[in-house]
Length: 219
Image: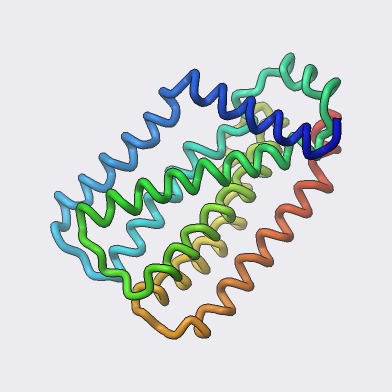
């Protein structure tokens, strides 16, 4: 099979498995809904800056629960079976694409529920949606590769946290700044630097994943 066919088949497999065990996605949705509700009960009304920061904190932990498990649920027997069928590049690409789609779905649901509870304080909605899209991609690429590394170290949660910190913090700061510009309704030219920075980080992480994952896969 070609690389495209392998990636498509693996993404379809991920969707089927997720549909059969809906408890995982339902648990994440429950976490988002309950966290937003608790924030509303605690603050009732928040300033736009706090509104934005709370949203991305919620999405960060949702990403950890949703994306970080990418390779942790794969048994050694299943990994060996994949090794005989598809290329390692197809594995990592399919994981990133699937996690990207999953994060987009979670982000849209969370943003909708967030707006219903707290009200819409966004000045530039299209730009904010762009920040959500880029943020979903950033979380997907970062946590997918980190999950792959941690899975080869016995799914060590401490290693996952240590590896995540230097990667996620700069990404999160750039995303918060970009989305804040959208909330304030600033001219879009002001946000070009943040968009370029985030896209550059995603390109670097994706390229690194494609280069390093085949060596991890052989272990």
